[in-house]
View (tube, rainbow, N blue to C red):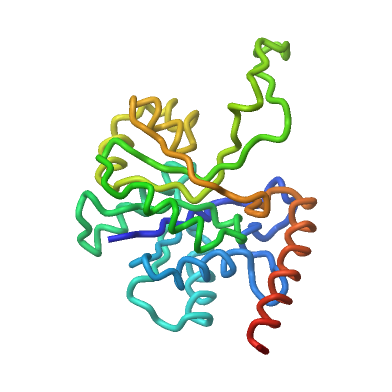
Length: 245
């Protein structure tokens, strides 16, 4: 079974809006709906579960029902205080489907609406034939020099850019692995390690990398939103041209 875990617990504080950024409009759809569209329509994804703030659950359910109707394998659940806690709550909700431990969990940020079906497929297939102790993440090569700095703001090291990559989502892992790793983490670790790659590497597990894309942006700031509007307009235009062929 393949379960998509869409993390949509953000409050929009850095965006400076009263509405969480995942509910802001990009053209004719919200950021969240653009993201969910890709997963709902992916042939390998069996269920989609979205973790949102408690006060936005009903609104999200209405949003999804208006778009997709009532679907048994499309659910909304209450998110947590952190990304990891939200992911854990999504996994608890996933138990309603009675998944096996080797089921694939595809985690994704709701505010990365330009994820592609190809990225999702690559992350899922990266686990084919692998043990529970393997995860995968989409990533892109770093175009900037990365500085390793001290707490006092001094450069400690300058890693070679050729070996540096910027992590994105989707990220995949076996459901059984997450059920084992998350409860074993200390509270401080749960706060520090918010990325699947970091959690798996800290446990001594393997993490495979698949190609992401520079357009697979995470909408966090007003500047990100403006760029996203350009990308969305381009995507809508191209989709319209395809439908007219």
